[in-house]
Structure formats: C-alpha cells, structure tokens
Image (cartoon, rainbow, N blue to C red; front, side, top):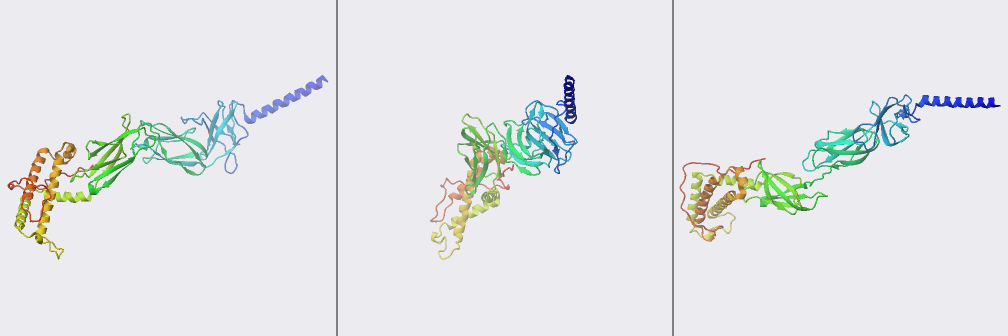
Length: 450
C-alpha cells in the first residue's frame, strides 16, 4: 500500500513540473518578459508583431522611456520588469499608427498591460502668447510622459503636435527668456481627429506690460489720446510712465498718469509724422514693469494743408515782400472807404475791399502761427524736436525777428473803418530793407520718419 501511495505522489509531482515547464515556454520568466494574455491588434483584429513599446513615467519631463520592448508574433507584449508604480505605455508601428495605455500599474514588477488596438494618431494645435513683444519662437512645447515635443513654435505663436494617440496628456510650455515660469495644461486627444487647444498665456512672474495699448486720433485739436488696460494679477499700481520718440531719437519722458489714458497735444503748427510711444506700469514700491510699445503714424490732413501754406508764407524772397507791401498800400488806400460798402447787402459776392481785408487777416494769422512755432522751438522742452528738424537757436532767433517785423508792420498799418485788429497792436517798426538774395523754403521742419 505504501508503494502504491508513493507511485501516485511521484506522478502528481511529475505533472506539476511538466505544467510549469509548459507555462515557462509560452510566457517566460519574470526576469525575461511580462507577456500575458493581452495582445496588440490592428483594426481588423489581427495581432501586430514587431511594434515598438515605450514605457514612461506619466510626469516625466526628460522624454526618455523607463524601458522598451517589442510585441511578439502573436501580438503579446514582451517587456522587462520595472520598479513598482504607475506608467504609460506607448506602442508604435513603422506606418505611424499608435496605441497608448494610461495608468498602467505593476504587480511585482510586471506591467499589467491590456489588449489594445493601434490607430492613426490625432493632432493637437493651439496658440501660445507671451507678454510685450517677446517672440513666441523662444517657447518649447513638451508632452509629459512621452518623447513628443515641439521646438519650432511659429512667430505668431501657433504650434502643432502630431503623433499623439488617444488619451489624456499634460503639456509643458517653457522658455529660456527671463521672467517666465513653466506653464502646464491638461489636454485630451482623440485618434484620427485634430483637436484645437485653448490659447495659452505663458506665465509671467514679473510686472507685465499694459494690454491693448492703442491711439485715438484727435485731429481737430492736433493731438491724440493713448488708452490701455491693466492685466489681471498686476501688483498695486502707483501710476504709468509715458515716453515717446520721433524717428531714431532716444525716448524721453512725457509725464506720468494715474489713469489708463494719456493725452498728447502737439504745438499749434507742428505735428510729427511718426511717433513711437513707450508705456510702463510703476508699482507702489516704485518698480517699473515691462515696456509696451506703440508706433503711431500721425497723418493729419489739416496739418498737411498748413505745412503747404507755411512753406509759401515763409519763402524769404523779394517778390513776397513786394506783395506784402502792395497789400499794405491797398489797405491804406481803402482806409477812407465807407465801411458799410464792405459787402453788397443784396449780393453774396464781396467787394474788392472785403477781399483785401480777408487776405490781410489771413496773412496775419499765418505770421502769428509762425511766431508761436518759433517760440515753441526755442523753448527748453523742444530740444528734441529742434534737433530732429535741423534748426539751431541762432537761425531760429533771426527768423523769429524777421517774422515779427513783418507782423508788426502789417498789424500797424491803418485799417478800414469799422474793423478791429485781432491781435494786440505792438509798436510799429520801420519797413525792413529788402534783401537782394533769394532763399526759398526757410521752413525746414520736415519730420523725420521712423
């Protein structure tokens, strides 16, 4: 009976050993493979062999897999053991199709993969924005837990990620430019589908520039208004520093304002063609933020017309002086005419007397504007404009004196009865001697375009 019991025991042990050998033949040991009943299939349900298997930590930022493997002929996964934890497995084939398994856990180092189907990957596209005039091409977009990244973000901030399988991904936006912190966004992709990601504003940890800076033209008063907005999250603001530059000049301070707008008024007669404005936030601690730039092309039709008139009024020539003195003579001859005949009451056509009076007043107005402009250019605050237009103080004072002489002579001439001068009458001076030389276009205040 003991012999019979021993023979049964030997047979049972032999069967167990043979079963163990058969299992090792099909799946291997834990050190050689993690294959299981899970398979990688194609869309028709056939097993996929030779697919590259990449295993990543879900929050990995290096783009390097923890381990790699291949699928067998029957589509089973051949993967080494890994430290216990949670992983993401990516399976790729040369055709570009892909399968992604998120939240893959381990059991004694063996990855608990599932049966999956490879599909054509989807795409992710979006826009990243930076502060001020920083170039978005300095931004790198990486996919955590993957070897996918984009370094060629376009100048307009657009980017495109391809080759992502269906799943949930964490995108990392980073740059080497100072003042920025890494920005992370969770997105979800779908197979064979292009997904649009919401616009991402790269996190700026400094004092940002103002937003939506724009200019509102005020042509009637020969000026403009700058308006802007304060970005959310900005530290308490004390005021805003405004600077400007004309052409290639160094920017100079225009003043500060505690509101989100700034009015810029030019002189009665002068207005630059192109202006570059600088606006910065100043915090309560006195720290200045990033600069916001705005280039304004100031094309005032009224000022263009005045420039043409000024170039004619200020042509220092014998012919112009003769014309002015002829006008004086005509006005003086009409002084004794009846003021009631200035206009025919039954006609809309003015008399020659009225026409001469109007022209005389227009000449006075033009000379008065010229005097104002010369006085403004001689001021200390107009040094930048004076340098950019090529005037020196000696020439300006000489031109100012000549203009005043003409103005005083014309203003002091007898007026027709019933008329009153628009400007206070100054002491009359003698008629200046006519210069034999001819010099055209003394007015040289053409603006320097940027």
